[in-house]
Image (cartoon, rainbow, N blue to C red; front, side, top):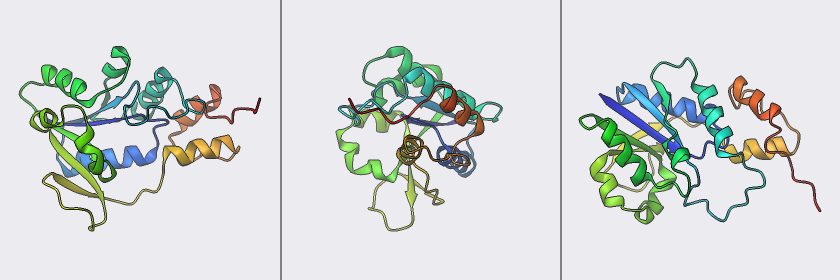
Length: 193
């Protein structure tokens, strides 16, 4: 099988994530894409947690977003493991489940400059084929598979900011995700003390 892996904070998952995943699914002729919400990103450590959702709710939003979508799955290994989430640990886990399959790890082009800082990156590049989701044609040259993604200008940061300001996020996230955000009152501005 050909399996895509999309890791991230998904805080919250939004239509941009889903559109890019579907594009990769079709362009790479994948059998499935596994969404892996992290517990704690090593690249976002030190960031304020005041306007972030707990890991369990982020995973719940991913489940809600992909429910009924053929070929989309979630693996909560990083949440169950706890602590800082490192890509190498997750890929070693997935390789035990899929020892003979072709694994494709999807990353945004904006991750390339810090790729050398990833824990055990040389092993990562042996375990999977790295797929760079590039915007436009003008990126830096690299040896990885490149998919030129459509421009989807939706970001989780913007979504959280809109919620904090009391603005609508309709059409930015799936309806089930929006309902979860509203029911749990996520991403509200923290009152000043």
